[in-house]
Amino acid sequence: MQMTMRWFGPEQDKIPLEYFRQVPGVEGVVGALYDVAVGEVWPEEKIAALVGQAQAAGLTMEVIESVNIHDDIKIGLPSRDRYIANYQQTIRHLAKAGVKVICYNFMPVFDWMKTDMNYVLPDGSLTMAFEKKGIDKSLEEVVKEVLENSNGFALPGWEPERLGKVQELFAQYKDVDDVKLRENLAYFLKAVIPVCEEVGVKMAIHPDDPPYSIFGLPRVVKNRDDLDWICNAVDSEANGITLCTGSIAEDPANDVYGILAEFSRRKRIHFAHVRNIKIIQDKDFYESAHPTQYGSLNMLKVIQSLHDNGFDGYIRPDHGRFIWGETGRPGYGLYDRALGVTYLLGLWEAVSSK
Ligand code: CS2
Ligand code: MN
Image (cartoon, rainbow, N blue to C red; front, side, top):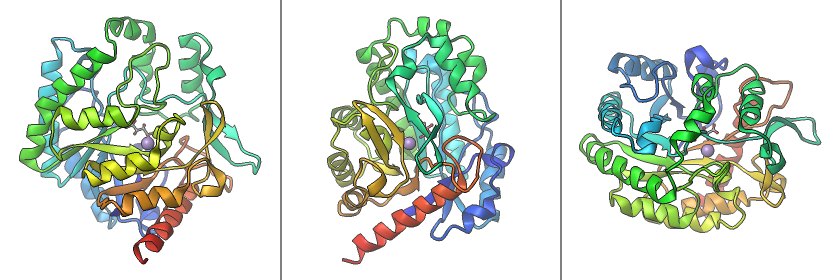
C-alpha cells in the first residue's frame, strides 16, 4: 500500500509540494497535466517535468488522476478512433515516466456533481454536499452555480468552455443509453488495455459520482454488477478500478465493504479514494470528516476490507473539509486531508498488526 495525496500542479495548487512530504506516511502525489486539451496527446517532456518536480521534493508520482476521456469516445462518434489513438500514445508516454496507474471516469458531460461546495457543518467547517433539491432546476442554472461556487478554481471535468454549451452537449448524448455507453466503454478498453499490458500501466476507472442517473444521463459505473461487467469486458489486471468509497456509498443500496473485499480479492483495485460521507436523508449527503463517528461509513471496516483481501495499490484520502481558516479549491484543503491520512494510516497499522 502506498499513501498519496492529490496535487494540482505548480500552476493551480497553492499548497507547496514540501507540505505533502511533511504529512507523516505520505510517499507520493497524484497529479495530472491541466494544460493539455481533453483528447490530445500528453507530451513526453511535460510529463517528465511534472514527475520530476514531485521526485525533486522526495515524492513519487506513480498515479495520474485523471487522463480524461473525450466526449466523442463516450458518445461513440467516428472521430473516437483518433482520440483513442491519442490516448494510447499518452499511456506510452506516461509509462516512460514511471507512471503505474491511470485514473479515469466514464461519466457523460459532468465529471461529478455537488450542489453545495461550501456547506457549513455545525463545527463551522466547510464541506461539499449533494442535495436533490439542488438539481431540480434548469441545467444552465445548475452549471452556473457549480462554476460560480468553486472559489475561483478551475475544476477538472468542469471546463467552462465545454459546459458553456451544455445543451449542445446533452443533445449529442441523446441516443446514448446505458447499453450504448457500455458498448463505447468496452470499445475503448479493448483498444487501450493491450497497450497498458505492453508498457506496464494499469487503468483504474472511477465510479460515477453520484452513482445513479441525473438529468436523464446514462450511467455505467454505479454498483457491484457494473464493476463486474467492466472487469469482464477485458479480463486483464490492467483493466481495473479506482474504488472511491464516498462515491459508491452515495447510493445507500451499495454494499461498500463487500465491493472493496471482492474487487481487492480479484486484484482489480489499483487505487483507493477513501472518504466518509454522511447521508442526510434519502440520497442527500455531505462529505464528512474521515473518522467513522462523523459519517455513515465504518472506516475500520473499509480499511479492513482492503487489507484483509490483499489490497496492494495506491490510496489517498479523498476530499477534505476546510478547517482552521483554510480556503481554496473545494474538497482539497491540506489540513483536513492530512488528518485523513493520519487516521487512515492508523487504521491500517492497527489491522496489519493483528
Ligand atoms: C474526484 C473526481 O475531485 C474529485 O471529485 O474524485 O474528480 C475524480 O478525480 C474523477 O472523477 C476521476 O476521473
Ligand atoms: Mn473519488
